[in-house]
Length: 81
Image (cartoon, rainbow, N blue to C red; front, top):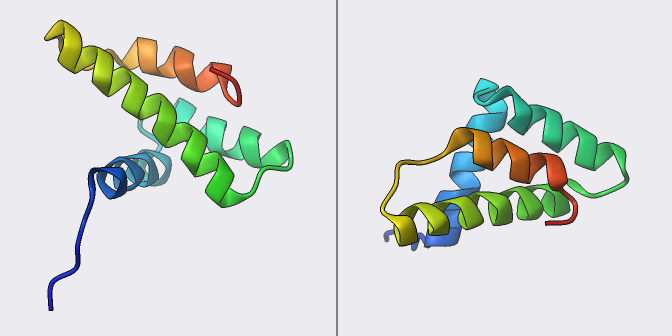
């Protein structure tokens, strides 16, 4: 039996890998900061995946490479975008 995967799962996996690998370092810092404000692990990850999705959508729409500095700026704005 195969496990169904979604694009949402892929974004979550990417954010989790960023936190675990500390690449970019702002990912782990953002995760810790959000949890420090009282958000649950799930809520923090949800917000971070939203930031990643936003940057990926911009990348696709503008046919550009992923812009890490722009993504980092989005992370810094969390919990509001």
